Length: 133
Image (cartoon, rainbow, N blue to C red; front, side, top):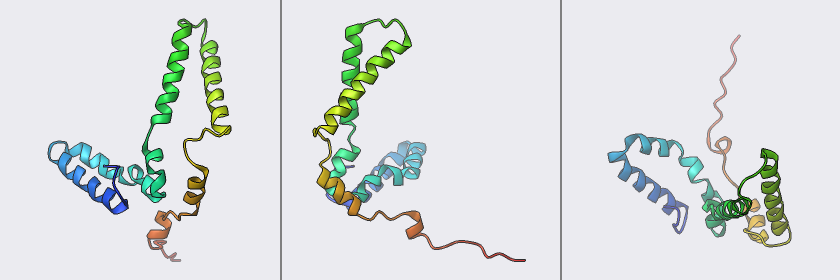
């Protein structure tokens, strides 16, 4: 559903998926329909960033590294010890990203900042009620 050429194709595919699962799993389809704006928010960004936005690969790699490090230790004497180790792994990851091994190219991030993202304030007419005395 996510790997489509443009926003219109993503929206169309999302609609087809809702129709397919709606027949058997009506509640799930309704839930997904209510979450449409959140699930398709990545389409407001430039196409080049889509894969990085909807992918959770960096999170999975980080979880795998934390698991690997904690498996080496085995048993921790207390909660503070595991927090210290996980904090060190997270600090290392931050250092790697700061030093230039970025998941997203800075030029693409700059381009994303230049892309206007419509909000509900931009698309909905003013619905303020008139005050009456």
